[in-house]
Image 1 (cartoon, one colour):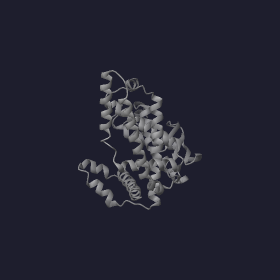
Image 2: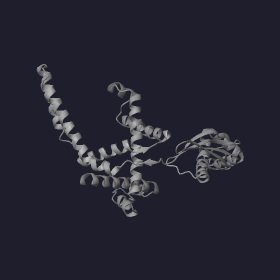
Image 3: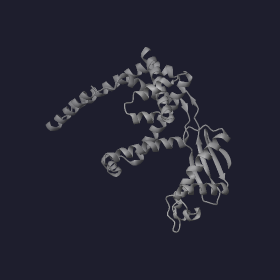
Image 4: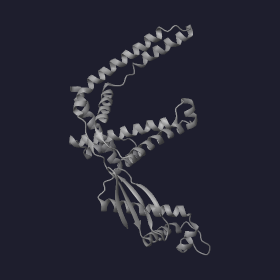
Length: 320
């Protein structure tokens, strides 16, 4: 296996691979063994037909995909080892050639953890309470202004009644206020994202934006709404939705790395007991098994760590 590496941009590396045709053919032969039992070849019992006859009965795309499933992890492992890459997401694969009897060629694009220059997060937290109070006062003032404007309108009686009803609903809606701690966190997070310096790889932003867009489309599907109907009813253009999700993706990713960096600076840690407590508190047994996998434990750990950072920032804000 030949591997060459090229820096595409900051923290983005492209590895070009070239696997010899003999090794590729060996993998095809190995994979064909798994297909034998499910393929009927005239004149042979199932599982006893020679590989070249079995191969004729199998869809080429299906066979290629199975070979790829075997070769892909090997290429990734070798690339990480040889070039000391520390990826933070699944590498993007681009295949140039994959056929039995030919060299397997293509590229893998790896993204590494971006560098984070943190804003003065403790100073931001200390100022958050006063800033939230100012925003609340401004919002209340704007709502009062809207109500007065509505009352001064000289419209038909029915319009006036509707206007009063609408105004009263606005007043009632203020009863369901966002909790102060949530307001503080929003203020702190927004300030940290705006003032910290972090350069994200485009491939990472696109991946996250696509994920968010996929969630949105799945939600519409569950509600039985066609995208075309949604766009007509709301008057929103698809470009605007994609643009909004791109912005959301960039800010959410930046926040993830910022919180992670703060946890390192502050030397915050999560021990195994805390992770196990989350698993034990899950009532469903099947869910417990799923949460006990290394991948899910890592996810639990990162979530608990973010919560610790959030708690620390809230304590600073509330004591200021």
